[in-house]
Length: 112
Length: 115
Image 1: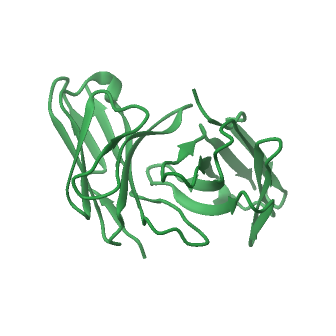
Image 2 (image 1 turned 45 degrees about the vertical axis):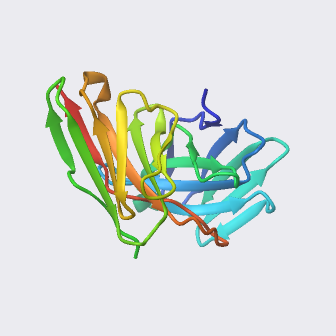
């Protein structure tokens, strides 16, 4: 049973607009959350993370929001650029161990 | 820069063959992981290792085994390859000490096709 869910398999957005990716989790022991970006034929690369003691973390064009009560996080990309076209994976872990649980991924396509 | 390398980018094997996938990291990380990625399923953990000669089962260990004889190297073994093991295999490593930001570093992946 997947503990991390990304319910939108794909997202298409116009260049310059905001991309919003959503992720839900079920395990209340998760206390650290990450987003990874993956291009075809490459390994995932780390994008941004957030600890459960925060509700927002920003890094340039990327912002992650965490709503612990709803067990929901989102990734905002503003403004979206063509190079952002990739698969984005949400991941979560408990500080009790080092294992990551991944969502199924959302494919983002940024249209020029 | 952390570097995680995998021995092959593409591999084609026959059903029943024994397959070895090798992974090497150069950052002296204690933890190493093997995942497989399939469409609609994301990344699923096969095995992981916290230290040399130590291994732990992940979520889908059936049909796989691993070996970690040296800290920098973690091997995934398919004892008798089957067509349902056709997938993208990803290796990752991470340090055991957590800092303010903590992540796993991934290799480029091996696309394995079993015919």
